[in-house]
Length: 321
Ligand code: 8YV
Image (cartoon, rainbow, N blue to C red; front, side):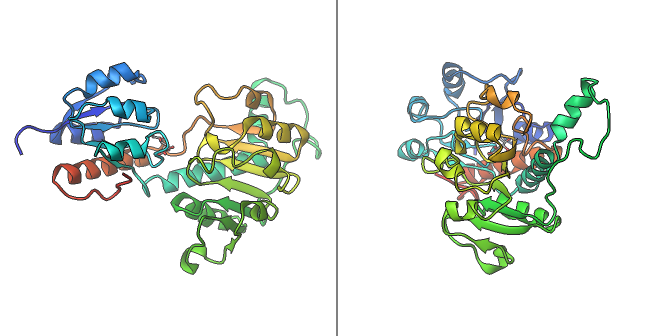
């Protein structure tokens, strides 16, 4: 091959990933790591061979329609691809890839952190101390819920769901799950399959969301389905904000129908629904599921493996369109 392929890297990536990009490609880096407007992205894409975006870039059908013909690939630095209109990419012959597997451990860690943080009122305790409001200790003080030995319901038994189940077994949790299809016994490891979301919801003490954001899963947790939950359930979301109807969840958190929620993802990030901030029984993180040094490197290398395959004329390992 003659000149190196031009790649627009939309956000700041780890140094080791940028070094490999410099070695093998002609990269454009985003010096101050701001989120590009569509016009900026189009100007940068002019003459580029590929984009390497994050979930912060909304590559809607209209945006993809405007991409120059030079762009042959979109190698996402993310496992979720709900920010990309895959049909639009397909219709323009643009190959799209993602980065599965490499963020499952990190994301499952955050799911467990949220579970524990919500159940044991971690954020509330932290706030109390910082505000110099901790005045007494009493057996009745800050009593939470124990997760040990409880039943964990997992919606979406994909890679992250499976690792979360495995870690939760360390807390002697019984695993129940719903998935589009039942998974094989060696993956199930004794987990109880529920054919419907509603049946699962009535069977668990903690519910953790791990399914992709699609039109079908939008508002999966809505007012109607919340009625199926066991009173006092703990809800955890490390998948996507669109799975939750914010108003409905906040009403359930206010009434205690849902005891607490641990959330890492939201609708309209970072301008999340303000109601979550007002509630004491929410444990909130700013979309850091995969934010570890190890995982960020691995995501970048995985995206680059996909680009390498594409520009070598091979089928990329993680093609989603
Ligand atoms: C990433 C994620 O940090 O990979 C995903 O789908 O949600 C996050 O863990 C982000 O998407 C990177 O673009």
